[in-house]
Image (cartoon, rainbow over all chains, first blue to last red):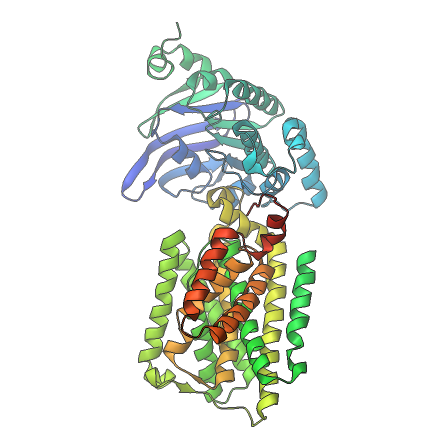
Length: 241
Length: 309
């Protein structure tokens, strides 16, 4: 249960002359939900982009299921089983929902039948998407777009799904819905690693969490531990009473 | 389906030009085919992939000179034209690999600079290109006016047919979907495993190939080229306008747009000699204002439907 599938050590990365991530050490378990929390500009998104190969790291090591995926290109990381749902959804707006989902399977070498079986599975996870299958993705509500983005990630049949800013811009009702859906997916054996600015939601959803501040991992532990930690409460949750 | 019918009608319609025996009409049809090749090629990178290239003239001139120089060395026309395509593919792939990390206006300006750069090279490499004196391209044989007009018409027409088939195949292929994902959200395209650098470069290289081959046919057709003629900035601008007229993103639209543009330009030029560029300019402005998605969206506009790009 506690085996780690993704391990990162001494990772340093940045853009141009600016270093954003300093000496990151982090391990994501092979199952369950792991959260990465921290304030704006802490480097959470950059860390996800380094893992999925979109940003090149300067130094360090990164292994996935025992093999190095350090500075591999994004399609290789995706094929290895890590899918990335980007911040702000980034759907292919004019394409239909179904086309967006099918594009999620772009990198796979599988038959059409397999692809459509997985499409059915995504529609079972998110029945709303089935209703909207022929609608242009860009015309849906934020929550439906987030479902579509997660569904697109699922279409690559990942073992680890990384979600950047799950709740950004969504209504509380929609966030509750997505939290329930993610718990169900996690129950099916999918490992989930999410960045979430709403720390209370993140710690409620996740089993393990890492706290980032100014480019470093400053705390980590079980979600319950962190939720009880006065420093975390003061910095990120505010007065919970 | 209807776009295949439109394409078929256009190609058959153009092929009827030699039947009239009118060499003026054949000259117009040859020009229309040439610009249609360029507009459809531009659509691959500018319309489908969303990178507004202003480098069309660079590849036209490159092809014209490659094929022209080979012709002076006695190489046969089909070989020299194929060579122009190969050279353009390689050069465009190199330029594209470097420049396609720029976006929008920056990419447009950088590709525009390539036109100037190649023109200067053609101007100064006097030994090879004849410099500003231009380059005379020998005739294959004395065929007579009509036979020669037919030869070059069918060369351009064949090139257009080839370009149209390749563009349609690309649009419908897995690569085409990847290219339109890159246009819509390049970051997300990377995240679903599309190698955007590879596909963008491929699209740019492919958009150079047929333009260069058209340049090669053009050089043999007019028998004389000089840098200011084949690296003319209008050769960059017109295909973009044609694709806009037809509706950006559709290769059949670009082809129809080219024919409409060439016909309109000729009619306006004949009737309003002094003010012809002004009228063409106003026509384009009117089109952008009232039919921003091009002729391809006309049927939707007439039925009062919303147009999604």
